[in-house]
Length: 236
Image 1 (cartoon, rainbow, N blue to C red):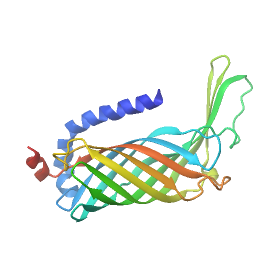
Image 2: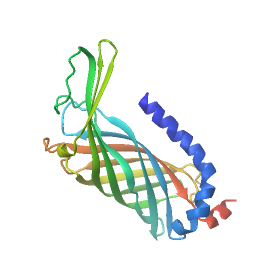
Image 3: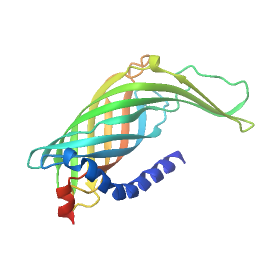
């Protein structure tokens, strides 16, 4: 249900984006987009997990950030795709962390680790008429971490206990990131919304007590360009 709600909100945002793009162009267009650079915002639905430890389950969330594609030569670009709210973590961690234990009999329980990060991938991107592909290093800094215990009793009462968990994690991570994007309106690539996937795999151990734990994050992406006025005139 949570995943369906995230996708519903995401696609509602796509519809609103087309209506609000004119305002962004008026305020920012010529400053953030020109002949050499194209910028915009990214909205993500994310699915994160930890590789290297047993019996975990993926965690679904969302992320927000922006992008700038800087043209080098012909189809080749340097692309920076930062996120200011990028989640990592996993669910199904009951056997890996100490947690609250209720006195009532339970019908279900779960422990998940929710991290909020600033991430910065730097890509070499190839841009074609219909799609873009990119690969490069990504750097991640975690600025918030919560250990969340949830349970349901046999009497259908719900329990949620949240505690700070920065001491359980390593704040910095780095790894490899790749992305593919498709233009929703390929005839107008400078103003077209982009739909795509982005994947990140971390090289650093992110849990202090589990040396083999690695971040694995799959992100469904909607990219909304902030087009310059010239691109809008050309589209018309």
